Image (cartoon, rainbow, N blue to C red; front, side):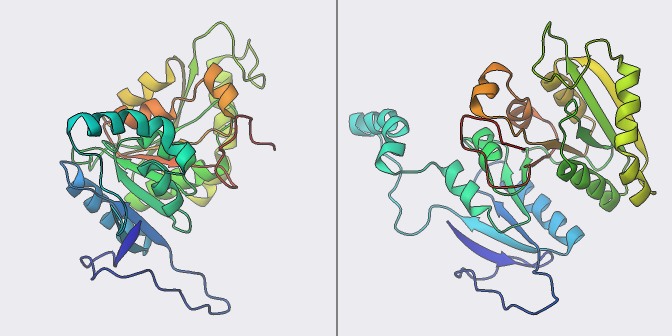
Length: 293
């Protein structure tokens, strides 16, 4: 995976290997927004959104290019090509081959943000394994109105996701809608949520939790909503009126994810607005067991 550097306002520069930044005592390294925009209907939307984000944050924009030099072409047509497409997903990991989503996840390391199209194959795998936050941009032009929506998971949304949502709302001068949708199931794995806690009680608790961010972002109007239903469906519906949807990535392992799947993957694939998925601290969780606290 190679990158082409660009500023937030200028177009891509000639292709080159990323240079090693000079280290200056007391100076923070420049932020980087990396974008992968393959040919297709969603390419313009990805590049435009990444450029706007780079301008808002003062970051350097890098465009990732795929395939990299020396990589084999995709299997061609005919019986051999059909067989290769069937066998590669099974034997690829055994033979040391990696998927595009896995290569992009690794390419995100060291950036502040990775921007990809919603139609990217394996985008749900990418947001689950990337080292840095990932913005998933649909083909349709993003809304220029509406709130920034922060999805709150019952008692488990990390500070990183809340920070990102408030910062995004402040930069866009937009209101923030913090939404918690409790799954209406007869049981839950989240023992921190009492069974007799009302929606109003939980809304008040979330209001208290967000009080610190309200103090640091006094110009951001904040509304907190708590409801019951299907979290994925509710968030997809809200995305039709939102300008950005911010989700925290689950730290649960794959065993618990099989029993009670996170809605992040489903929402990412179906949202009508850009989705920002913010991982928890530490390296990506690739094991079957939950991240230890």
